[in-house]
Length: 129
Image 1: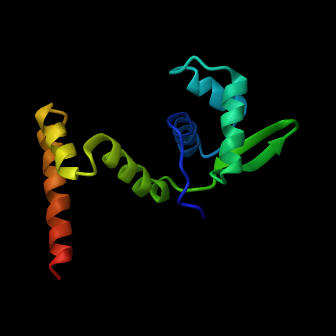
Image 2: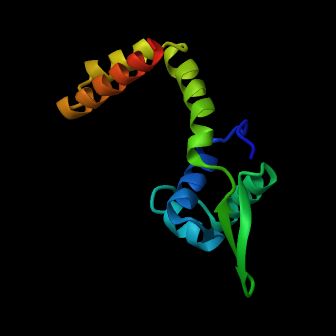
């Protein structure tokens, strides 16, 4: 399974639809994506073809002339490089700046802050063993 795949924002939108659905045809992906973006069916099909070339999606099924595509990579496998790229582009690679931005703009409620504290405590305990 490839994990070093670079995806555009639009490709990631298509992947999110496929991860959520499990499998979908190009027309189904188009129906979902056009709720948020004004794009043609041919554009969506081109993106799916690119994702297939990148080995990010695979042909899962065919019913008549309709081809169903499924993710060939897990979301979790793709998250680390995407997050690293996001941190580098948006926060100069500094996770402290990202957390500070979340806190400064009140993007986290008390429950989410508590969850982060618990995750950090668990990570710290694991590293101290």
